[in-house]
Image (cartoon, rainbow, N blue to C red; front, side, top):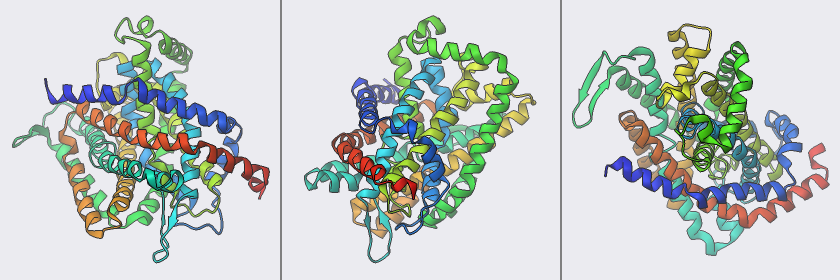
Length: 469
């Protein structure tokens, strides 16, 4: 049995029925207790997303906090992850991804609310500190500190070995190779590692240098970079896929029908390539959570730094992250992959979406690959930055703010970025899935326990008419 096989078995265990039920049930419970807030308050949330609150306590504006969270969520999961989910689970995976995202909006709202409600402010530095470890410890009580620490440990590992580094830089270098050396003509042998394209090596080095330069500046520099890059990269990708959809509009109705049918009857659509509805659901939910991170507990770490005095307001702003990430961007990727038949080509990773772009956009193949490379580079680069911040806050909680521990971690993080391109695609995504699932468990337990407090805060806020101020 290979290491990949072992990782696959662990992944199946972590992302089995119990965890999927926990996440979906949590989102459903919160949706009910919050009276389907993600539908009738979405307009207000989108308005507040770009309108910063005055007089709040925190390190960065609400918009900057959202961009920091989006920088971590809008990554390779939106381009590579969705395409992989549709390929492995069939087009029906996109349907279950949407279901998980709708319920996840209520989850993300609750996470943002609790992050601000239970955060602490360092009297010396004025820094706002918060996240699941704080709302577990302060909201559930000191007896649950062990659960808060467990979350922090999983958060560090997820950032260092999974979603924050290896998957992202792997996606970046894969896109670079697709443009500059698609036929493996310029290879070099690395001792004990194998042969790799020179383009991959150069790309990895450039990314590492860029990451190091930004990370030195901490949250403010990460937030500043995110405020500039996130809106630009999201618009560029959305416009690109819109062009693809519009130029192939005749294929859209059939694609939608295929997605819905495959969600409940995969074999009827895939010809037996996908075994069951459970496979489609598992791939859709897992990749959806990987992309928008609702339930993982990562985004509230950024939300806690927002300059706000209203937990409900920040909860609504946080909720828009899941809407933008999955309902908008992931949906567009999924449609592109289904409409062009890219999911049926036996491809892996970035090659799936690259095929969709090359066969769907009205440009030559090289231009399509360059556009996708630019989008993926921005998506993944900002995710690397955002997850360093998350992981460092987890480490800060565990180490009591040790500067030495944070400095050591930063160098390890940069090292993980450097080695990411030289790992296989399947192993990379499996490791990321495992740590995502482990993070979600303690966080979802806390959301179940504290759901009543979130509902009470929400009701009091709107009954007092604070949303009209």
